[in-house]
Image (cartoon, rainbow, N blue to C red; front, side, top):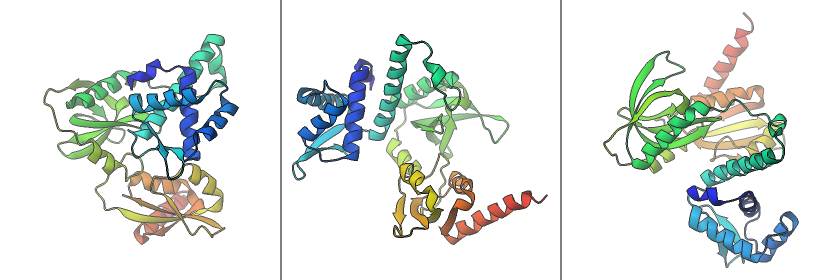
Length: 304
């Protein structure tokens, strides 16, 4: 996506507005799109729309398609190349451009912004090295410091892809013992090997798409049924626990009931425990029993 460096703030904003509009309102005709931009961008016209569509398809693999059955345009995420990654990158670029523009006008922009935590500048060299190894299909060798095991270990990894989770970057790949995840900020003395490997990127992404977080478990997929307090519905609708989340029993006005199809792992159980009394596990029964036991232990710890 090197071509993003050629896009200015106006173009980035227009792409962001266009994709967001079509995600919310698919199958819009050309006039409806132009009317929308009339309210948001006075300089936007039919020629601008054509050039933007060409740029998205040619440079980024993002497809805005006209559907003759519905007589309108829509954002075709199935035919687009890594649409979620592109949207995440677009958000970063628009934010960065806004900061850059603001810094030129006023040098106190950061006085009005608070980030979640410090930027991990020290991880950037590792990030570049890992990404380079992924693109070259070469293994990486490194020392790793685990938060759980207070010792340093040496690993060789076939890196398949990078993933951001909770404001940290991780590399996901395969060691001789199977799939593993490593935090970029906990890697030291990284070197790139010389023996090419055949990437399994899509297989790896598929495996990790069925877990919450990054802790892959070779456990059968299960349907998990949860009942949340109704007050949690707006939050869970806007930020689902997992892409497989779907509402069940929508007529229920006292709880928000959902189903997930996942490999239940440690991070998922931690997510459930985080909600405390605001969630109840309905199925499977083994998970209900496990969460009850954990909540019992938490309660008993206050009695000591």
